[in-house]
Length: 325
Image (cartoon, rainbow, N blue to C red; front, side, top):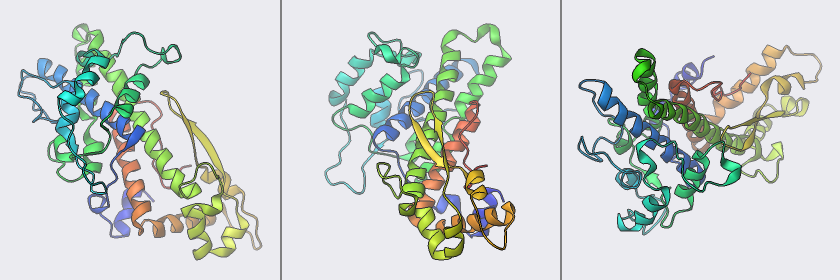
């Protein structure tokens, strides 16, 4: 069953699911992705007659375009779980623009001196600049200021933010003689960043599903999935072992994800069940968990990020099936 069909069967609208904004390293990655999409539109303005801006259109009036720090200020929103959370000022971000040396024009981020171990991806350097800045730049965002029409719906903004990257790639293919290096870099980096954002959302989702939020104690019995399985189907819970596999990102990091095939193969019981029967019973656990706020919130964000990475055209996008094969 496709994820969309599963949600509809539950009577769950994706837009109605609780939203989870990206904070910390995850929020830094998403802001760099927003920035790459914004830069893609800068290029599209020059090559597509009458192009309509969709990424932070209120940040500046063309032909003016925002700097990275101005974009961050523009899309900022207060976190509802913090008191005294105030929008950063231009003065507070002056050092930020200085550190990135106004690399916003092309964002190949050829900034000296990048750490030697990041010579293969300076995007990692830029993400850390965002994540470590004081005051914090990675609190909440206003979805409608990120993507036009996504008012109040962060997942919708995340899902649609890579459309300009895909369109710029199409323009590059249409007229390769005029597709300069900066246009190609924006597409390449946008795809890498979209896949990394999906990777981080997968990491976040699986941390709760597999380990109950504690990656330092990797005990499946603590995870949301196994606890729900034990309450719904204790016999099946006793006859399988949760199996995982590792996935990684080009921009660094690995995470454990549920390996459903190996988990199904681990089943031992009498009378025997077919793999399809075991898989169907495990899917029922996911269906029930989708009725809980925390699980549905993280899965919806993962699905939005997965859609964004697929739209960007990245290779081998992160799987967003609830029980990936």
